[in-house]
Every structure is written in C-alpha cells, then in structure tokens.
Amino acid sequence: MKTIIILVLTISCQLVYGQCYLDRHNTSLSDAWLSCDIKESPNKDRIPGHWILYDLGDKYNIGEVTLWNINTPGETENGIRDFFVDYSDNGIDWETTTRHNLNMSQGTSIYEGEIVTSLEDVTTRYILISAINNHGGACTGFAEIRIENKGLSSAIANNDIPIDFTTTPNPATDYTSIRLDLGSPLTGYISVTDANGKILKTVPCENKSQMTYRLVTENWSCGQYTATYHTENSVESISFIVIR
Image 1: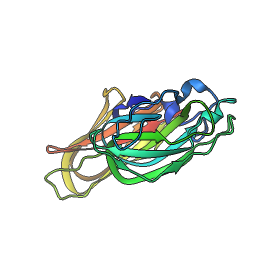
Image 2: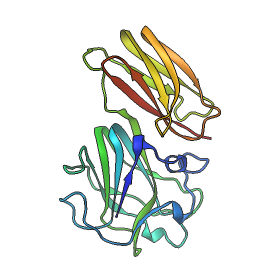
Image 3: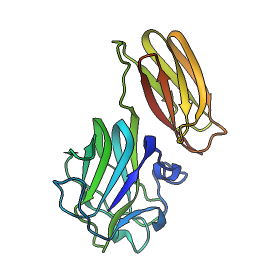
Image 4: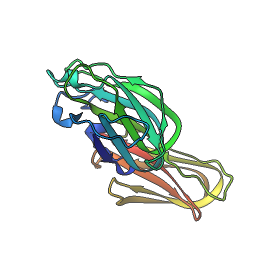
C-alpha cells in the first residue's frame, strides 16, 4: 500500500520519462513501487490488497496512463499483472475503468512500458491502482507510471468564448511556443511557474484574441512546468515538460 501526493503532476523527470529514451526504463529496484503487505483500500468497494493512490493536488483533465513493470533481473515476477484503475474527485466516491493487464518485463535496459488505459474526457484528482495478482512473486508492484496531463480543470468564467491554449513542442528542450487563441479579444496575462510555484516568466496579453510566445528553456532544469492564462474572472492552465 502506498499513497503519493503529486502537486500539479510534479513527478520527477525520470519518473515521467524513462532514461534518455522516452519509453525505456532502467533495471533499478530503488525506483519502483513495491508492496509486500495487504492493506485496506481507500475504495470501500475494493477488497484489502496491494494498492497505490496518487493525489494530483487538484482536478486535472487526464488521458493515457502508461506503466512500466518491475524491471530488475530476478525480481520481475513481483511485477503487477491484472489490476483495476479507479479515479475520484474527493478520494471517497470512486469511478472505475475495466480490468487491465501489464505484461512481465524483460529485465533489460531496453524495456519499454505499455499504455494500460486511456482516461479520455476524465477530470479527476485521485487515481487508485489496485492489484488483482502478479507474475508469481511474493510482493507486488511496478517500476514507473506516466499520467498524461491535459491541464487543470478550469474554464474562462462568465465568457462564452472558446479558448485554445497549447505549448509546442511538449516535451521541450531548448524552447517551447505558447499559443493562445481566444476567438475574441481579451485582456490578461500568461505566467509560467516551476514545480514549486515560483514564477519564472510573465507575458502580458492586452486586448488580444491570438498570440504566440517563444519561451526559451535551454537553461531550465528537467521537470514539469505550468503555463497559466489569467483574466479578471478566471484562469486556464496547461503543463509542459522540459527534458535533457
């Protein structure tokens, strides 16, 4: 059993992207989640077992969930096999997806993870992964998770104006272009913050319906950052990742 609090999906760069190759994972057991004790589940509809709970810190629009199984030679049998993915806004009332499966890893440095579910059109704060069984080991776990983050669950209040707010490329290395398309002129500003909430850049947007800003990130540390468009009545946030 384990509970992880993630603020603004602030997972380490290695956790979001394995190694120098975006879909590969190393063979270290120290990077993995491993449960050897059965515990009561946060979801009252689940029996006691091995589970891990992710608190995203706020309600996010999410998409694909990718898992990497235990990849340490001699330990791969502890890798999760069948499991449920539940999600909740409050950590009490849960929705569930269908039963999922993750293959045993090869125990090599070229092992790549698998997309295990796609939570399209889901807005949530809590994600619970509950193991049903494993590949024959005494404990159960997996090495890494990637949760696709499509931004905070927020909208431009009091305005029936569609908003298109994106960053490209994402992940970024030396730069990313922040694009804003409101359909109608509004006055506001864009702020860019790091994982600790420190404001790194502020860009004014006065009476504009469209704008593109090239954000230079070549000297930034790898990790997750948030761009937020602010108006007098509301905010809209998206996240992007810097990798090396």
